Image (cartoon, rainbow, N blue to C red; front, side, top):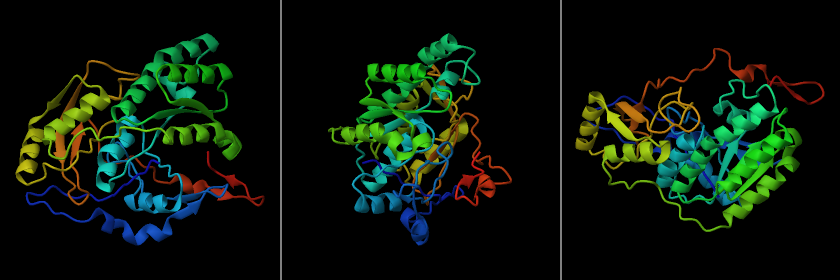
Length: 336
């Protein structure tokens, strides 16, 4: 089914590139990352870099091991289809020669309402909430269109949260199906466990049986600028791409250094389909500005910096894991 790979190798830009094996960087940790879900399903937790500043997927080692052990392999890519999924398809599948079978596009009523103009994602009354969903389904349709660019069937999952009305969920499912989703199913797994996700799981299995025409969006031999423009236009929906002088110089340098064949891993805000975090929903007629391009050559790709993205992730001083524990009755506490 669908798989993922992530390396977390970074380094300074050099006039003479250094190359190393991404697989070798992580091999020694693989045996320490096998886990099981509460209902016994095996999980491989092997790396997870941020999809806004890196490629946002787990390691290729985990994918290849899982493929040998299971009938279906499900991986999570960071943020939306414009970020983790695009990088999974254009980078991970390219390196691993992987062919995914289906995409699960995860949505929530609250996030959709937020894109529809409701800051709290709730609204004052039923009518306002439904209007926000109608408006912001444009965002869901854009993500579905991005999936279709890669030739893979799309199953829309509506993750149910407390406070979501049946009417809200039904409207999201209806509009997703009208927009061409292979299926659109409620996911109540958080509340009910596996039994709450049976319909979604069956839809994903059915989607995996469908034939598809998966293909990355660009070839290895395409020039660096064209690769960047392809992602910005066909994935983000940009009208144009502007390359600042620093980016132009770096691109020229990397092509002289023999790095023109590597994929691109664009760094941008996760808050918008554009590179501007203030452009919500499904923005149109915008430009993407590339201010610089970095070369983490050990990882094997180039990182164009779009807009004002900052590469240092914002982590708190105290990790959330410090507050998680198990009480005397065996219940997990401190998650929220």
